[in-house]
Length: 221
Image (cartoon, rainbow, N blue to C red; front, side, top):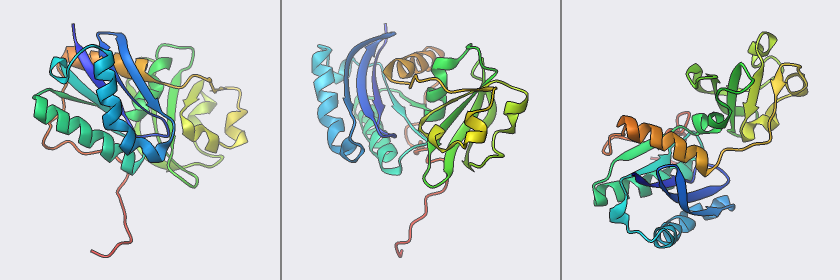
């Protein structure tokens, strides 16, 4: 039996949850992206109480570690690392792009393409095969009508909030699938349990947010 705390603050919707194996015991969500920082700690306290547990009962802590919002990723990973350090629990970091693709593994599509809005016409994207092996690694990309030429020979399922940037030449193509389902806590639970069972943990001292690209600032140093 594994009890795990899950944290996700990297996109528009944030949530925290406690699971035991594949069962979600308690869950809280926040739809207001600017409030993710103030939402996180009280929500963790609430779900631990609701699960009739304590933080010391946890076996691990998982966090969605990007790509995504710079601020959201920092908030989530900082909380996860702080708890792991204080409680001496393992840390499990997950890819947001893999999480978006997870519910569509072994479905009718030949390839699964995850897209996260990165402002203007840019997205963070990755492409996976049915077995969730990486077909095209995570990278930022500027979308235009010539993007994703793989649709000529493959049925591609597109998922994530970056889909809104796909031009009609792509969305109307006969080989394109655009399902309504959006990943949530159950996908994170499944991904985390797989890594927990395999003993695939992240190094606490050196793990940083996966911003998807270099962070630039105009502030003078």
